[in-house]
Image (cartoon, rainbow, N blue to C red; front, side):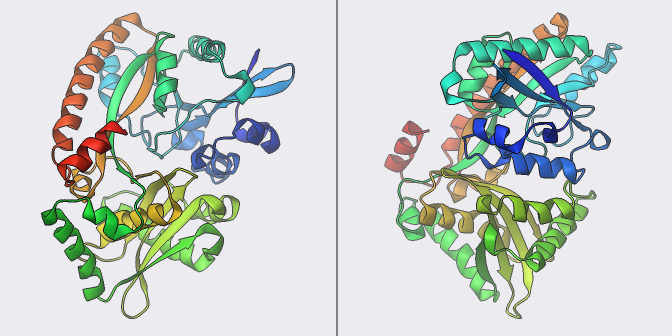
Length: 387
């Protein structure tokens, strides 16, 4: 097997990438990753220098992995600021580090894609050895595989990577015929609360529309981008992604995009959420509004997405990281996983101890928060069994 590292995804042919990437996970599509690079959302200046890994055999590409040199921890969503601080307090450099992740996208999914006929434990060993070697050669402090699938993380953990557990809140489809059937699984109190929140939308003169990517116009994406940036500015910062990126992805990967827009009674758009989806899952990604309306965030970002999952028969909905307010709206806390190789054995031992204690806390947190789910007891038990 031959390992290559690419300074840009454009160094590999789209056809070759797509032949390996049979998975429909939207964030590993060639055009999505290319759009991040060509619009300069991902670049050395932004703290993300591409170094994608390609594994080939007999001149045929058999595996690919998105990879970046990071000079900070912005846009990763698996927080290691305290690790960097510990390095600096001991006179050592934590950055640069090597990260396999989808930039600015805290959505769990595959991080290494392998041609079906080549799937075997040897591939992960070859990949992990290559990651460690390039880290040694370039004086990277560490290698991180973030928000990967559990099976991938377990494979890396056998190669001296440390396991890290975090959490997210996901909605699961039990084969509901419509939104009301989903509500019927809830306790009476929370069913009434959600109905009240949805009624408030119409009482404020707001109507909702869902538009798939092929039908999204330039005017719509311009309006959404205004919402996106205004919402970030309210937090005192600019959004990570520029307008050029959004303009490109609705042309390049429209089959993966759902835009939800809210109109006021004058017919003007006032809020929006941009989502991605594949054949199994909806991913809530970007939200914004011009002014605040009672319950509009819940309707735009959660209830419209749940309705879409039901009508499209999608299995689950990942609305984005954090937010305990999601629990009483039917989103269950689940574990998410990352793997970390720390070159310095002294820091590895300290970080392993931290991760062990952190994992105990996360498992306890998830267990406690599941008790807050608004479902009837028998439904909750069934939900746990199927996670």
